[in-house]
Length: 158
Image 1 (cartoon, rainbow, N blue to C red):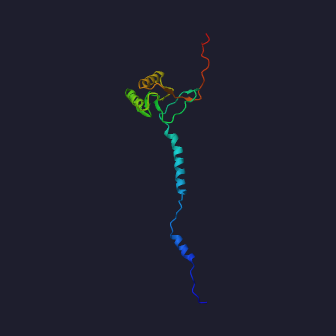
Image 2: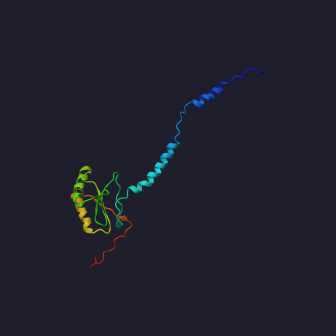
């Protein structure tokens, strides 16, 4: 029984498979990274929309339809300071900045005015006048929903 042992072609095939390049793409790490990024952006997105902290008055008005691009927003905080797109603006330069925005976006662009409920009504009207002088006539006053509905005005029946 002293014959020679022949090697089959299988052993050579196994050795060559170890050295062969893998032609499949493993997408599991890619999917893991994408899911983590999705969660990060889902948590961070609401934090990015917070601007100037103002306590908006509550009204029974229906919300305005949303637009596709970021709207022009003007905020007036409790101290009467004015913020344009989240950046504090000196009232002297507000008209100039508004005119520049109106020339870029168009004067028919809607502007959202957010004012703290404790701000003097006259201050809010000054800002609205400045918005109008800056070329914006379509001004939306932003409020929180769920406020009281005005009832009958006392003395209206007399």
